[in-house]
Length: 100
Image 1 (cartoon, rainbow, N blue to C red):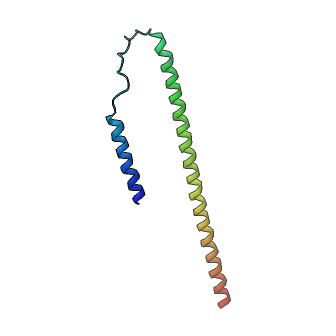
Image 2 (spheres, rainbow, N blue to C red; image 1 turned 60 degrees about the vertical axis):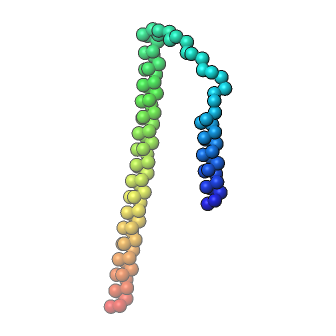
Image 3 (cartoon, rainbow, N blue to C red; image 1 turned 90 degrees about the vertical axis):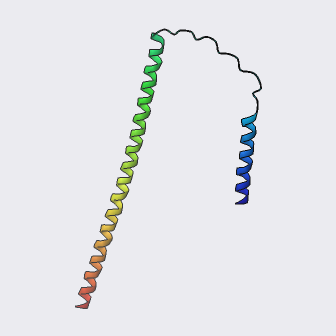
């Protein structure tokens, strides 16, 4: 525990040092922006939209697979419990038959 606290305190000190450090070189002003043509930004935007759509589809497919796996697991558990209950009932019936 003390090592953990020591590491956290050391991290705070190092963060404080870096936060107070002056920049090595003064910042240069940005170059004036060049006006872009209307056709140029449209193509990257479409590509970005397609990429985002693909990512979303993959994420949805991934969650669907996880849901299917979880559902299959629960079905297996339920089936297992049902078979156990049936086995217990069979054993009870056998015990009753032996008694009579």
